[in-house]
Amino acid sequence: MTILAAFSAAAVAIAAPVQTAAPAADLGGVWEGRISVGGQSIRIVFRVDATGNAVMDSPDQGARNIAVDPPTVEGGVVRFVVPVLQGRFEGTRSEDGQTLTGALSQGGVTLPLVLTRTAATATLAARPQTPVPPFPYRSEEVAFDNPAAPGVRLAGTLTLPEGPGPFPAAILISGTGPQDRDETIEGHKAFAVWADALTRRGIAVLRHDDRGVAASTGNYGAATQRDFASDVKAAVEWLAARPDIDRARIGLIGHSEGGVFAPLAIQDGARAAWVVTLAGPAVRGGDIVQEQQRRFAVAAGLPPEEVERSNTDQRRIMAAVVANAGDPEALRREVAPLLVSMGRSPQEAASIATVMSSDWYRGMAAFDPADALRAITVPMLAVYGAKDLQVPADQNAPVLSRLKPDAEVVVLPGLNHLFQPAQTGLISEYGQIETTLDPSVIRTVVDWVAARSGL
Image (cartoon, rainbow, N blue to C red; front, side):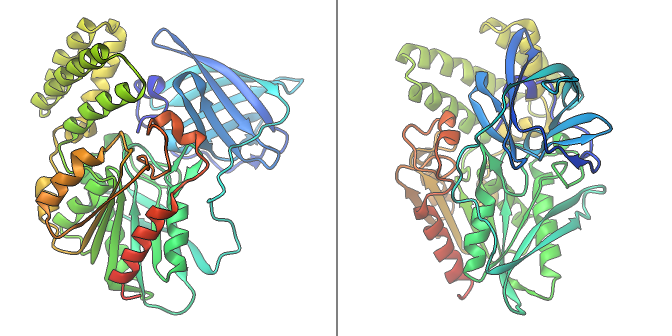
C-alpha cells in the first residue's frame, strides 16, 4: 500500500539506517512544512509527544499516524526516520528552537523542507490493543541471512512461550509496500498484536522487518514477489534450525500480498505445516488493482458515470502493463501517452509509468497465484473482511475455494482490509479507527492455529 503516493512515485528505496544518535528530549510538539512534488504542494507534519514517540501525517493525501522512530539529534542535526516509507528528514534547528531547516529524502530523491513548530504539545492516536510489557512470554531480538540473496540480512523479533520447548511456531508475512516487523500502518501495529495473541496460546512467533526496511538490509525497491518468497523460505529454515522450535509444526501467516508470498515459498520448497492467508489475493494482481479502483470510487460516492469512466481508463492502463510485463521500456512507452490522454501532465505521466515499470509492479500485475495455491497440500485457512476494498472478499474468496476446495474460507462481516470494524472500508478510515484487529479475526485465526499445532 502506497501511503505517501506523490512523493513515493519518484523513488522507492533509500540508504541504510541512520547511525546511533542521542534522543531529542526537547522536540515535543507539532512540526509542519511543505514539499513540492510534480507541481503539487504537500503538507508534511511530524507529531512528537512528551515521551519522544512520533508519527508523521500527510494531511493532503489522507495519511495519518505513520510510525516514526524516536527523533534524534547528532552533531546539531535533527533526524526523523520513517521506516515504513524508507524515508527521513534531516535538518538544523534555529536559535529559538522553533524551525528545522533541511530536507526530506526517499530513494534517490531529496526535497527541501522547512518544518516550523506549530504547537508545543502533540497528541498521538490511541491504539489500545498495542501490547505493552510485562509479557507472560519471552522476546528475543534476532537476525538471519537469506542464503539465496547475498547482502539480505533480516532483523526481527521472536516471541517464545515460557518453558524449554520445542514449540510450534508461526511466521508473520507482511503485504505490499515496505513494512517494519510490526506491519505498522497508521499507528496500528497489527503484527505485534498477532504475536502477542499467538504466543499467549503457546505458539512461538517470528516477525521481521522487510528487506531494506528499519534494521534489515537489502534493496526493497529492487525485489520481486519471488524475492520476498525467498525471504519467507529463509525464515522457515532459520527457525527450523533452532532447538526450541518444533520444525514439524511451523506455519505461515500472510497478510494481503503476504498471502501470495507464503504459497510461493511453499512452491519453492519451504516446509510449512499449515498456511493462513489474511485478505490474500486469489486472482491476478492486475484484476485486483482494477477492482480496487472501482470500489474506492463507489465508496467515495462518485457519480456512476464517473466511476465507469475512471474504471475504463484503469482497465486500459492495466491491460498495457500486463501486455508489456516482460519489457519495462515498452511499458513506459505505452503507458505514459495513455496517462497523458487521460488528463495527466507529461511529467506526472512519466513518473507513474516509471513506477509501473518496476520489476515488482510488473510482476504483481501479471502474476496469477492459481498454480501456487493449487500446490498447497497442507491445511489452509483463508480469512477475508466483507468490507475490504483492497482485496475484495467476493472477488477472491470464491476463486480460492475453487482452486483449493479443502481450504477453510471465512468471510467476516463488517471488517476492512486491516480487519478493523469499518463503516466504508476506505483507506482514509484506517487511522480513525482505534481497533487494530477485531476480536472476531483474532479468535478465528488463533483458535485454528492452536488446533493445527496440537494445543
